[in-house]
Image 1: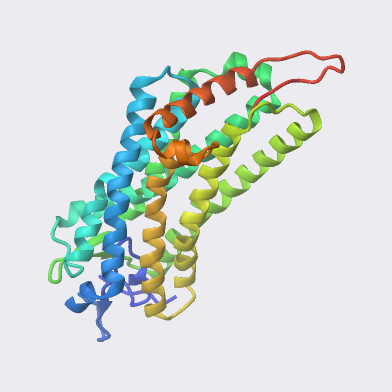
Image 2 (image 1 turned 120 degrees about the vertical axis):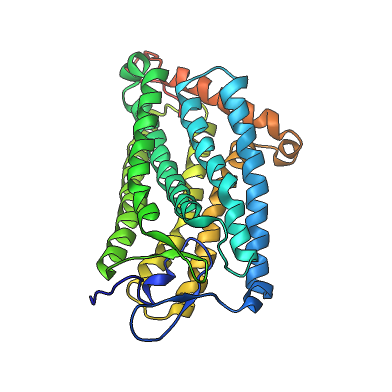
Length: 346
């Protein structure tokens, strides 16, 4: 690939966490120029701004409730550590989402400075990596409870869970650093964009995010599911499947939400159609953001009698965590039967 200086090439500039701008087609260094102000009055712009406002309100409210319940209202368990950390990740992302909304509304003009340009992008990918790593941890933990109940009963502890969560956040922060390093602000047009020096840097960042933030976690989770399902079917051990449904819903929601984002980023490095890429990335990024408000509602609405649960959101979130705690205690206990089979809950 050809190298260039100062700014990215036209096709590389489309890799943005925010609505894109249209670069000049002049020779020499590419200088970003803002899109026409009319763009922020069209249907697409209004729709994106509206959806992001809804995501912000629901995400802060829902995840705030989860943090309050899991952090202060119920007894601490290994499972509440997982879900509390997941809620903190989503809450942090939603807290900075209004800056993205402002960027949409203000004619794609970034007025918050270079530091916030870098930091908000860093938070986006910190949320992505920490969320998927926590879902992997939850899946592996559930698999260990089913496959090795005695070991899980003796070794699973809140302290170990906190250490694992801390390591997950550290790794997530390291993988999110490129978003802060390459993000920049054009001092003339006040555009927050990616300033790659070489095409190879752009490709490496996109591929790294796809592999470590999507492919590898998906393979690990699928393997854990295979082991869990095989164990349950062979020993007929399941007593309650609500915790399993909650975990499944969280994982499916994450992958469905982030798949369009990764798809258009991968497409960007091979397809030279900036219009298609720009529109796809805008909707892909918004769709990915929606994952940050889904989890609290999944906690509450995964059981029966959906309509009644709509009127008791707070109590249902709390009951979900309590059931997680009870199911884990049952899952790590051994019941000896005549044929020597184990009784475990997932």
